[in-house]
Image 1 (cartoon, rainbow, N blue to C red):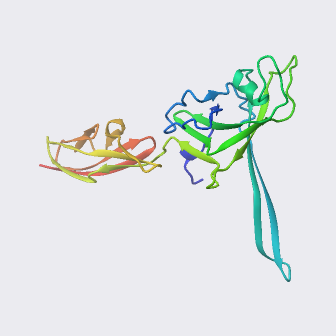
Image 2 (image 1 turned 180 degrees about the vertical axis):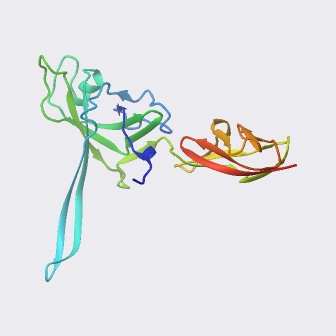
Image 3 (image 1 turned 30 degrees about the horizontal axis):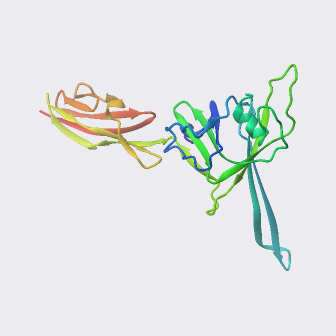
Length: 256
């Protein structure tokens, strides 16, 4: 089966952050922590995950003979849910907006910023509301003897003027590596150097020479350590650099 398993996701951890300050700044990138204006919801039900529901009104237009000509679409609505397992101030404010520690009031959802973060090892993906969301309780919420107390919260996502729902942040994924120069000529006992450059999904690059695994197809002709190639005897060899599943080669010629 063809494909790239590194691009398949199995999220092993997740968090939801909420800000009741609509002017709270978003982190600069996926590796930057959320600032003090953001509150952590706490423990989440991983089996429930982050279900997403899309609603849209469609109206099909037909010509004579029953041929579909156009479909109009409007009233798009997106909701995204999460199930909180903690009874903390942030969860209580989402479940009972407008209430206090001593008084429970009829809930009136307030506008909030919501960020959904999923993680797998060093891989991070975030969806942060571009404008705001309104959160409300979905279904029953109560206490019993056998189950963890939980609250399933539905966030209705409102788009901004550009119809943007979320700002997406993600850890850049490695796309390829390139070793330069692609060919190298060294004399026996001399040392030449090559550089391995990684290219990521966000089009950034990085020197990963020191992080690569290096090998030579014929160590009797040339050896390699951290990008430094030493000529051993006249002949040729192929030097390979490997980094996180990506490889590239350099053709080495050793002269007498």
